[in-house]
Image (cartoon, rainbow, N blue to C red; front, top):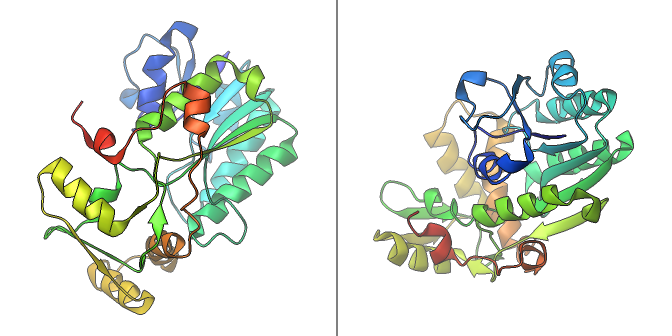
Length: 275
């Protein structure tokens, strides 16, 4: 029995339809939002240990999409992981981050390291899919005027198409025994600067995009002005998205997408293509 989380989101929404023939269980916070795939639906949130343990009863393999960014995300992750172990789950496939480390420049990468550590500590088998930033999302960093601002300097990012992450997850979930205690770093086929992203995404979307480099001080000031109610951890996450690119943390390119899926990783233009 396979259970899938995150199926109401963009990534899980790609994975679930591709595995319908396996009859997976969908675990969602709000059953009314679950995709209509004719699959069993169980309600549980990551922070509700009792509901999570019940929802994961008799599940062997769990696809765990990382929780939404929040101040409590580490606690929610650990609660859900503990519930999975108590329910008897034997193998977790977790969507992590390519820079997962307790000292990651990208501050949310530290959350992912904590989740990975909790899974290892649980004794369950694991497969970590360490995704780079999503190619499809990068153009959305632009403001209404089409300007991407941030302290990325001339750094490069080997961003990956979300569809490629979904394909990789499907490949692992179809044969989980072949990926026990494995870690994969999922990237695109090349490392791009934000100048590259602005130029090429602009052509692909028909929108004029530009990149303006900021200092870290300018980045914090501009985001505080735009989002005066944002918590410090949110500001740190937004700014460190760029500083992680500036320091080279997100630059290495791997062939893990091709190794898992059998097809090459999508380019920026392919990731942004309609349909």
